[in-house]
Length: 275
Length: 109
Image (cartoon, rainbow over all chains, first blue to last red; front, top):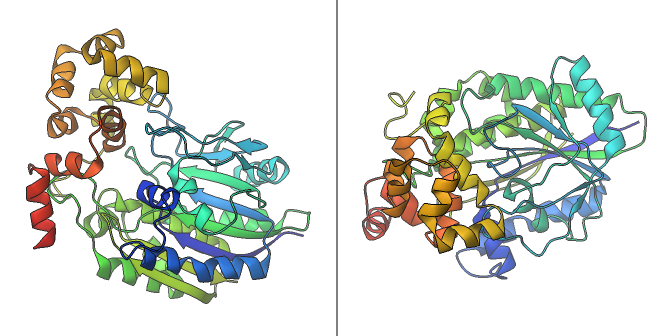
């Protein structure tokens, strides 16, 4: 039987990928970020997961507004890398897990969540910016990606994401094969990429969010989309993906690791929770 | 929604509808060969994809703020920026009504 062994909340950003590709991990500006991932990677090495279920958002790289899905699930055997406009990075395609992904599709639909099913789903920095910080890039652990629209409003509510997480937990619990699964929620933390408040971050809210995600996530899920945008920026609303991760873990969790740094325009958070 | 999120262009369905041609053009720049074609003749490339004279002019002037007001998504401005060699800080500062130097000075203060 499959089990959720833990969850990881992490920011994503193109700049993380650029810094990683350039080997800037030890530079003063970047070291607090990259060093922060080392304990998370050690934890992954210890708990030996054999599947990553990643709740993330696409940045208009796989999907366009001709047909923009609210939820989309990647069921392919591999996931290509999207060219975001700067050319592709030197990373191999990611392995998927079609058998689990189709199980997840059936379970979610029965549970009244209805993702668009994608046999091809190219992944952007929403997954590929942080993943090399956590595993070797020969990608031994397969990835099942679940994309959420947080770009084109109306977007799903925070509560919907939290409930989606519970549905992910039920889907995992009903998968008959032995799998040790880590659920990711990735996005945020606070950032505002345009307008008069361009570049504004809110470290106090970022840290409050990480505190409460651990201890009282239901309260965070009752906030509105507008609350998230006012506190964390219109792009910072990506934080709601962490609620799906947390919802998949069940009532009580043990914190393994946490890190926060904000060298650029985004608050970069990392939280590792064990069930 | 902009009224409550002051100074931001929340990407609503209305914006997405109005900015559709410009966003679609920008999205096409995910392909290396399209980037090359665009770089050699921006106006001709845009016209071929159904962009209006107004949209062509906004891109020609590198008027990122104007493009946002027109209905562009910030993520698609980044694709245009990638094709013309303008990074996020410069685009973001422009949408705030600042030059890059003014933005950096504000950030440092």
